[in-house]
Image (cartoon, rainbow, N blue to C red):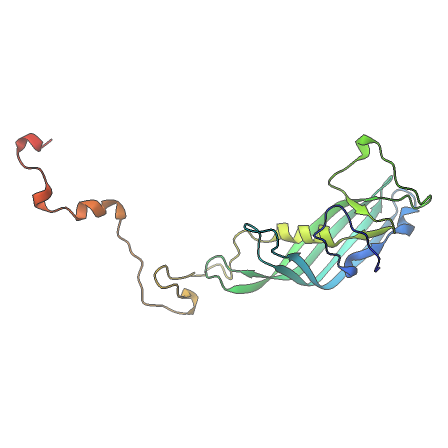
Length: 211
């Protein structure tokens, strides 16, 4: 579907491969279901535009998944899983590497417009759900943002290119996975540095100074 007016929780980007018309399901009774296959070659997870603290631009490639839509009283429940390949920077050696990432998906979608009357949906205060995504006025459900959020949450906090990554030499910055740079770690305890600089002449003399 090409025409999309957005939802309240997006990164201002829609992946057309993750946009589905659910008008027919919204006309069916409570409990009706649909199964969808997700398949898109690329999904931007982070564009790095939110400043310090945010990951650099990240993309999921070869993304695939399966979800089930369930008709609730007024809304739709989306449940399933998605998986894709994401290139990250190793937290030890700083090299880039690609890992498979899989995430569970469970979100509620609420229609903005009633599928039968074409009028805006009126909800009581207790029916409002700030965590729910919107089904746009064309009765299209955009899974871009929930899939993006699910994959971001599934990423490792401290990614490693391999479990035994040797990291970088603290003296010259060489990648120790590529070989021994010749430097050895400094095992000196800096807490005693001041005492090592003292000479015997610096010490107090006399019995009065001996504890």
